[in-house]
Image 1: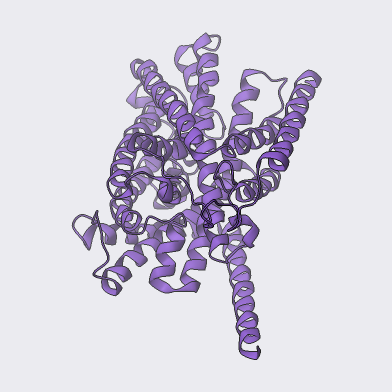
Image 2: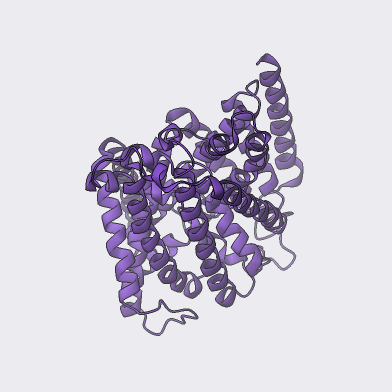
Length: 473
């Protein structure tokens, strides 16, 4: 145990030192005078359709590795299957609608930009707050799961130390530019998808439908189905983060639809396969409150001492790494976009001269993640993250309807199919999911909406004071 702690402390110290040197010597804040032509350099457009698929799947794929299984604890396997089907329909209809917004307004602010354009500053603020909660709180949950997987492999390595070291490593990687980050995302995402396919092939012969149905309530309980919704959302939450890299995509009008549609289809297949097959291998109740359910599933299927469970846990780190890395990209772009528009301190909108990355946004989001790791359990962090996500889905769909009327002439390279029915389904199911999360998680909902209310009040007061000063002057 002491060896593991000392080892991680050494890594953490060296990474922090290197990060400090990088910021001090290689990253300079950009100003108008830094660019050769006197203009402020922009984010680089380098991401291809394949890389965008990798970023989209990578953001989400950790949801197939952990988190969803907490839904079994509240709903059982049958009730949670229904939760997952409801959520899958919501995400499919949402993505086909959301793609219209992302291609028409390819802005790093994503939902904030759409809501700001549809509803003005207040709407933009609400969407920005919800999106920040979504993307700032997903990485801490993933980092903690990475620590759990590592601890499963070697009990001498502490969970918390690994979680903190993860932040330092991937913030450092992302400081070196989106081109390198996108390449890294492609590699780890392909590896994590292949690993899940191998996992499904291994456990398929061990699946028994009777085990999947065992230990469930005599009849499906609606309360359990609704309570399972936030954990079903964990299968897909963060896929909307592709919008945050829209300014860095080559030919966004064609690339974004390809990336979104291919990624949602990939994730639907993997999510349903992992959840259903894992539930029929053994006693699913033993998996319902773990942060590393898939290695335990292999243990049930192949025996306690089988080497595959350890091998899979080792490879399983790729999926968690992919999601952590891609969510780091997204939260930094959201912070950068909000700061650029004046919703957050302007320093967070600075881009490094050498690497064209929003370095202060990366570091600030990492500090928030550090604090979140210490403030709640994994399932609580997941619920807060999906609460932010579902509020953002709701306001994004409302923005779609408003912009169709407000700006009928807006160039829309991709239009939501079967409008208005497909976005209406996404909107209605978003409301259902929001009500379910709030009803079964009232304390966490109070924290979320209380934080939103206080932040919104501070923003309005700041706006009034700023306006008053302008009038006086």
